Image (cartoon, rainbow, N blue to C red; front, side, top):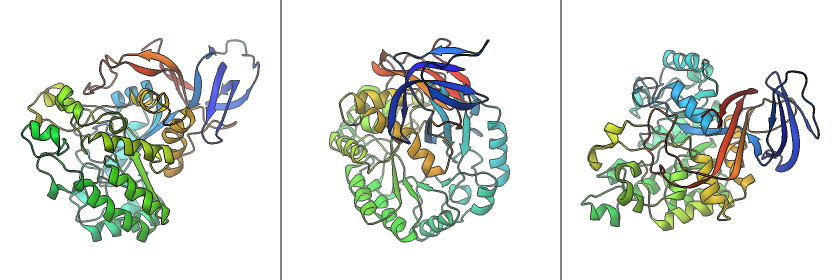
Length: 423
């Protein structure tokens, strides 16, 4: 395949240039001007489009096994490809949880049938109970790319510290869901003006901040690579900034919904704007944007969390938390961060490609001769309105919103796994 006339953007080298790309046998063979296609070779004119490394999502839920009425490995992979993602890391809070080698191997074996790269994290604790550590070495040997009890906080500090040290010895990240349930009465909504109007006591930001403060110190002491997942509070951003300056190997994820929306979205969208941690105040959203801008927050992750329409249609306190995000993430980054001038397009791509790749030791997230042809081709100026999804679920507050930046093609291993022409 020859990609003609595109603007190549490589966050790994912080370079952008207009050139053709020659892809053969799944590999980027060369880049340069006026490359000619061989007889019968596919030719794709990418004039006006950006060619970037395939996006990498460090935080996604494919609900498989156990909740396949919401999503499966196959439908999740389709949604990822449509959003420009060629690699995803699935969370471990499935049923059964990914706390044993047989469960992990089953997922990874089935994942080989999909057209994108699906990686799987193992749980920190057995049964997600936060009491007994999993056999991390065995899980790592079987292919776990990291460890997390995402969805459930690790409330025992001593246990969390030992888990960090264990993950550190294996040279993989440990990712933490930071919400202390002792502070929370109704999860999924910020404790503030909107929750009071609804007659609810929600989730105050101290629930997150208290665990972030603890785990920043544990990260500093343990020396492990620790990921603060889906950061939502401005104070949490300040804590990560301070402890990174002290030398902690901290990483922070921001989701598109947390840098785009506030608690006000609950009034407009109901349970479609319910997630853990919840959408917070405008001051928190601005603090997250500042953290993205100065590098304190180094990863943008979707926390893609599918639920059925029936589940999301329950009364707000009974509806599950979470929204889908793979198919809108790049567009929300362009719309909410790049166009207002908070990030350059290169900075946005860095947080969605090479930074995740480096954290997890993946050989992707870059455009280089001899490297894998995992690519997203998109028009950063095209406007579009999400109205349907390849995900099995459609629980998104962004349905019907005008966004900028449209994925035109996604290539994984040199194969076209999504084309906007085909849908």
